[in-house]
Image (cartoon, rainbow, N blue to C red; front, side):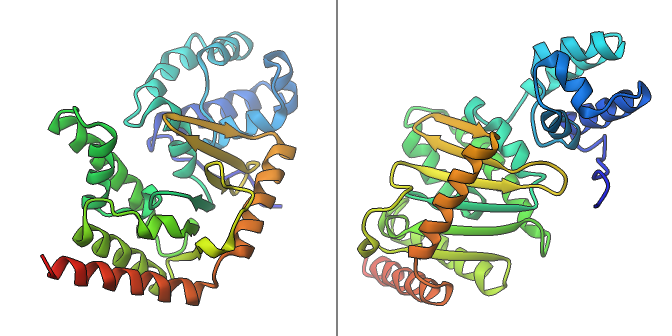
Length: 280
């Protein structure tokens, strides 16, 4: 069995807290399960804090300072975790995504954030925040593009996206923006950086019709499932719940077109958008 993943404490506040938590817990001779008991959490949750896949809450930090005699270290540094460039409902999921080994996502309406181009992301944010200042939109776009830097690593994380056909057909930003956005997905897939499938309209009803689903697995922590709605998002770690969403994703992927046929459809739609743009 592989040992715990070595975190770089300088990489993020969460990594700093995780590395320090592991150091202090081991220094006091406590197992993850033993430390979890007074916090009313499982040993696996302590492991998630240590591996950087879950965000430490202030009440947990207070208890950890008390148990580990940390002189307020965890409370002081926990405050840094509140300073996120992402909306509150997505912050923890984004931070988990950054250390994930695999990311599987079903997208019902929009291209997943990791796969978006700058013009597409800008159109999405402008539509969602019609009265926001230019600076606010710029900051949101920059944060989204920064997330996509995960894909500069040639192999990790493994990204597998199932796009509903509505994602291809909904014009976000106009024909030129859509043509560029779909060609970006084609490029990533043809370079073997991502796996992409399209769930066609004719597939009919399916288990994920009610919203977006993201599954994340990690090298040394249990998997997570993230469900997103209108201005809301929930991160799930309860094993039975995560298994249910894993089954949901598997069935959606089984009903989708093969990767080869999916790329052919994406290319055809991209060409239609490009032709439509040339007519104006």
